[in-house]
Amino acid sequence: METPLWTEQHAPALDELPQKEVRDNLGRALEEPMNLVVHGPKGSGKTAGVRALTRELHDKPDADRVEINVSDFFDSTKKEISKDPRFSQFIDSKRRRNSSKADLINHVLKESAANMPVTGEYKTVLLDNAEGMREDFQQALRRVMEQYHEVTQFVIATRQPSALISPIRSRCYPVPVRAPTQDELISVLKTIVEREDVPYDEEGLEYVAGAASGDLREAILSAQTTAEQKDELTMSTAYEVLSAVDTDERVQEMIADAEAGDFTDARSTLDELLIDEGYSGAEVLESVLDVSRSRYTGSELATVHQLAGEIDMDIADGTSDRIHLSRFLANLDGGVIAD
Image (cartoon, rainbow, N blue to C red; front, side, top):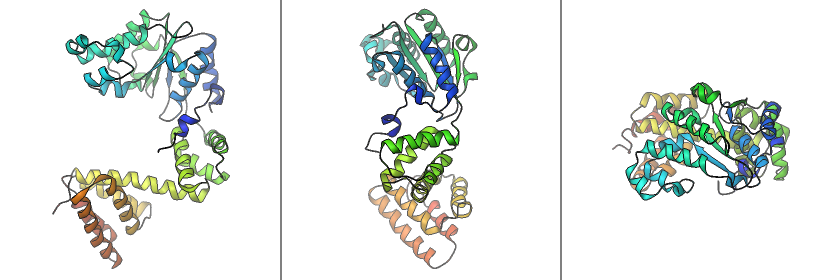
């Protein structure tokens, strides 16, 4: 999306978090600074809650909150870590040249904690998606937590608190974050669409909330997608937009499986779309073409359209949609359109 994401534009204050127990638990860290393990399922609002907390704690939260996404950080190369504007100030050319990636990561963890806060008595280091942190790095983190506890609050956000070593868990106050209920999701969506002056009906809010299955971020972004495409959020518009989005995502997976030669998985997804979801062959083919325009260029895209035209004619003749669409998938084996 080119416009600001509603998840950022309408980032909640601490008292606007939908789960009361989360508001209460995070509120304790306002009264007494402490390290936290914030844990819960994907999309439940863990990171949004921590950011809301730091906006209350720090006069300049953007300066005194350091965010490290563990999954991205540990998958980055030495060069990427060294050039990251958050960390480049800690890494000189000699260290970049002579250090292993593990040493560089440990150094960044230490320096992120060692820097003095811009305002106030301490700063916050948020380690997000921490279930991906190796045990040796967790041991290094434990030592950093011990050394810099007077100037740094550590907040560890994770979907799997059991993946953390016990010395870290014992140094942190646990903050469980459950998935928001249907009513809580509807309340959040209603607040946002009214701020955005988007026409809506209750059924539309209920549909978006139900489709998100407790994922707060997904619910907000789905509402934004519907509002931007249809200028309103009603049951009919939400169903139309979100059904198309869901189909496109599965078609992406189906094409990727076919390109990788996983024809059984690709055809299984095709069966779900045709049989379980009840889409027609023409509807699936239209989605395939939409996805293909962002996936292929030049001669490959031309070949896709030529093959799609043949399939469309066969479908129009009334023969098996599944057979003809399977033929398209078989032609993708190997990552290019087969001859």
